Amino acid sequence: MKKIREDFLWGGSSSAFQIEGGWNEDGKEPSVQDTKKDIPEGTTDFKIASDHYHHWKEDVAMMVEMGFKSYRFSIAWTRVWSYEKNQPNQKGLEFYHNLIDELLKHKIEPIVTMYHFDLPDYLQQKGGWLSRNTIDEFAKYTKLLMENYGAKVKYWLTINEQNIMALASGAVEGGKPRSTKDIYQCNHHMFLAQAKAMKIIHQMSKAKVGPAPNITAIYPNSNTPEDNLAAITFTNIRNWYYLDVPVFGKYNVIAMDMLNKLDSMIDIQDGDMDIINDPLAKPDFIGFNYYATGTVKQTDPNKNYVSKFSGQVDQQTGFGLQDFFEQVQNPNLPKTQFNWEIDPVGFKNTMLEMTSRYNLPLLLTENGIGGYDELDANNQVDDQYRIDYYTAHLKQMLEAIAMGVDLIGYNPWTAIDLVSTHEGIRKRYGFVFVNRTDEDLKDLKRYPKKSFYWYKEVIKTNGKNI
Ligand code: BGP
Image 1 (cartoon, helix red, strand yellow):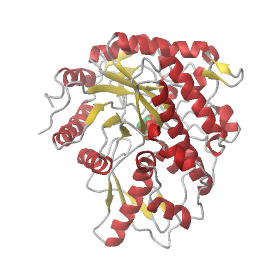
Image 2 (cartoon, protein in one colour; image 1 turned 135 degrees about the horizontal axis):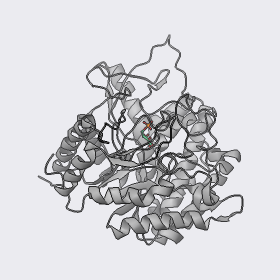
Image 3 (spheres, rainbow, N blue to C red; image 1 turned 45 degrees about the horizontal axis):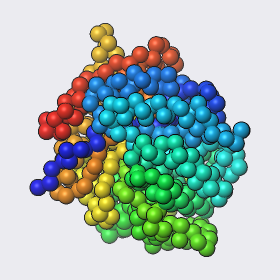
Image 4 (tube, rainbow, N blue to C red; image 1 turned 60 degrees about the vertical axis):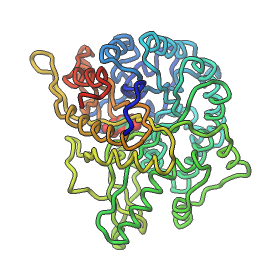
């Protein structure tokens, strides 16, 4: 029976626009998250977030106290490169140098996401991912990151949740609707950008690099062959599409068939597949986010399935596509306070499926539970529900490892409280409470939650107390 590695990367996760704040400080330019107009009512925008830009040192101190071995965060492209001046932004580069150096000083391995939903607005105005120019800009950005951090950072993640960006594209493009054809053309360009980035990383450093899609096992709603076909279709369109391209260097037939039938076939230019198939452009591991499984059934011919472009959808929103699949709730699973299903066994199922299909090391880059947390009179937060969620998932994780899954780390969402993609800071995920609400910035002080002490023990015992 395989055991958890001694050098297992126990850590936590975050993303720049959701944690940093300082949205226009020291030369940072706006990303699509800063120019977003449809912030849902009653929730905060990302201008101040958890003000990590000014609290990063004490935040790292909290991670050190928890015993983190790794910290997965993203670099804001708009902080390190100025499109206005067409040059690197030294102050922005310095911020991440300081953060990385502080982590390394405490033997915390930085795991850096290059791009987490925050495309420079400058590029968006020029067509965003629909323009092939964005591919070249991403390659240029990768070189900048390598020149600066290539010798310090051993683990890189290219694009966070490319699959969710395609399925809920409005959520990351300021709500601007795109046609299905354009969405999948953007998607193809992201694959090319990712392949170029992986090659540059391999050429310019000794670091390892992987993608970071949101992967989850898909269940058929019943044992009818039609529901099973819907499940096979959805898992290929939602999951394998995003790993088959970088790992196997090809588009799978089910994804291609969907594009064909939707009259949305992408334009693959001469040489594109060579870029994707370059031996230096292959991932060293698979980074993946897991929250809960999905359940689907065959579609109802009388129903109108509307695409999700509102900018206010998430990975748990029921996706539907006429003649392909309809996502439904699974009555066998409990739900979080924010209505997301909870499926710890599904976590193991997901890892087993990925391992048998790709046989690559896996790195968990997000898993977690959003809930309403409050400080009590003694400035404590009793988030036992979070401990229960993690305990159940870690039990399954240990079983998956025992079965042979090569998992190199677990970096749940999130290290400290930050702003949810579209539900404000009221939906908290952290081991550390940040004292602010959506309406009131308060003092932004940090307080360890009950889960903080629990996780510290998990790390100290390398999971033996689970
Ligand atoms: C993932 C994203 C994160 C994140 C998390 C929780 O999809 O990569 O950025 O926020 O899900 O989602 P939410 O904030 O919608 O609760």
